[in-house]
Length: 350
Image (cartoon, helix red, strand yellow):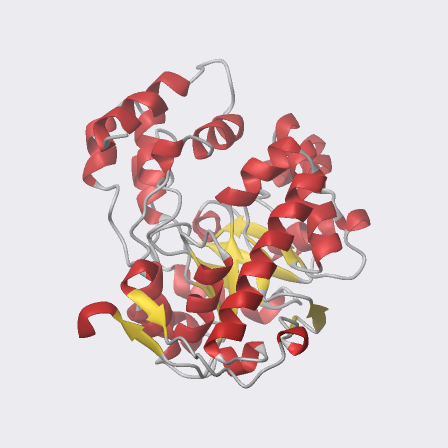
């Protein structure tokens, strides 16, 4: 499928009678919304023909937010706030608990503005023992939200942490976008100090640069999520919604590729780092960790599974974990910590 035809497919998917959240789900499932420029393809893990390991003793277990995970995975924040999302979030939550991985929900702004939508995010009952992440757009701190609303989002779902997502390109292209990103660092600092749970800051598909990360670390943010270029193209999705596919194509490859964002952020020192954006397989997870991430985030591939069933989510996560185990075994890494120390090379020596 060419880029041009992908844009046409996205345009053809729009139903003007549906709300924005429902459109986001529908368009995110379109193949034309996916990009392959995470830069994971530019790297390879050095194969160990003599791994000196028993495959049966390779463990993918790790810890996140004080809870044990059976794999270093976060189901990235995706949806909520529309009737279709309640079923999807339930399937994702059941899958996350079965696989013992973390789960983030989509932006809860709509549920704070309209409490009747809170039920679409209410998945804690399915997640008794793994981390659950609340989520709001950081830009909302310039549009009437503050620490109280952030606490409300956390309390709404009994979350272990709060994600503040950054999305300037999406807002700039969105017909109803909110584009005042001025003065956010100080307001985010107030949230970090006052919300009562750890704060995770992530992009949504354009990646975190070292400059942005330094500002966030400087105000006490201890967990960053790259959400880099290479996964869902919100430029294409929002341009399709705005009926302006040309600008969507212009900005479709705008951002920091995930692999490069991971390397840049890890160089800044001690911060918990989630590598996400175009993570589609267990090999991608292994590369993300070898490049410097502590965990990896997966979104769109699991959205497709969630449309099908909770069992499909469980199966997809099991497959990803199996792929990760094989990559670890063949790299000579018996643990996630050891995987972070293995040799990873750039193709062509670049």
